[in-house]
Image (cartoon, rainbow, N blue to C red; front, side, top):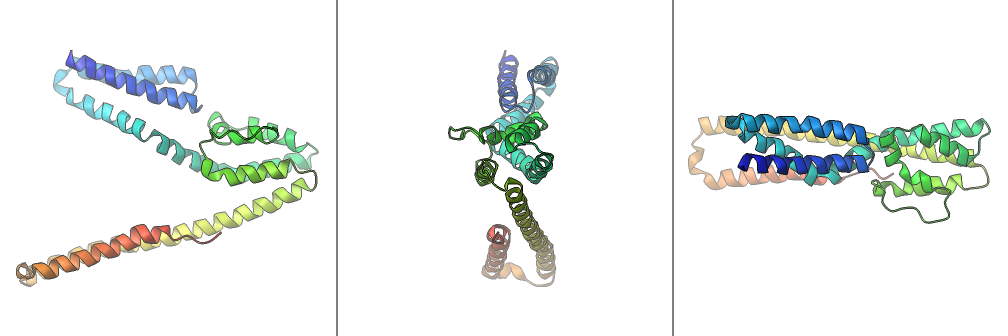
Length: 244
C-alpha cells in the first residue's frame, strides 16, 4: 500500500509537468500521452521489485525538482531559443518584404514557419497589428523591448525595411558586446578555479613542511581572505557587463 501511494504521487507530478509542457506547446497531446505512459514504467518496475523501491524516491525526486523549478527551466530554454532566432526572424522579414509583401503578411508567413515551441517564444508577434494591448503572459518578459520595438517598426508607414535593417544592426552590435563580455567573464572565472588548486596545493605543502597546527588564527585569516576573493570573482565579477 505504501509503495502504491508513493507511485501515485509520482504519477501526479509527472502528469503535472507534462500538462505544463503541453500548455506552453512544447509537446502536443499525442506526445504528452506517450511520455506519460513511458514515465510510468519505472515506478511499476520498482513496485514489483521492492528491494529496489528506494530508487523510486530518486526517480520521483527528479520530477519533483523539475516541477519546483519548472518556470526557471522553461525561461532558460525560452531565452536560449530567443537568442538563436531573434535576428534570423528580422532577416526573414526583410527578405520577404523586399519581394513586395506587406509587413503584416511577411510577419504572418515568418511566424507560421516557426516550430511550435518557437511560436510560443515569439507569441507577442501575434499582437503586433492588434489595436488591443499586448498580452502579458509571455514567457520572455525580459525581452519586451524587442517585441515593442518590432511592433513600432512594423506598424510604421515609412521606410520599414530601413528601420528593420538599423534595428538588426544595433542588435548585432549588442550581441557581439555581450559575447565578448561573456568570454572575459569565463576567462576570469577559469583563472579563479586554477587559483583554487594552486592555493590547496600550497596549503598542503605548507602543512606538511611547517607546523601550522599552532597557527589556527593565521589559517582562518588566510582561508577567509581567499574565499572572499573567490566570492568577488565569481559573483560580483560576474555581474559586471559591458554597456550596450
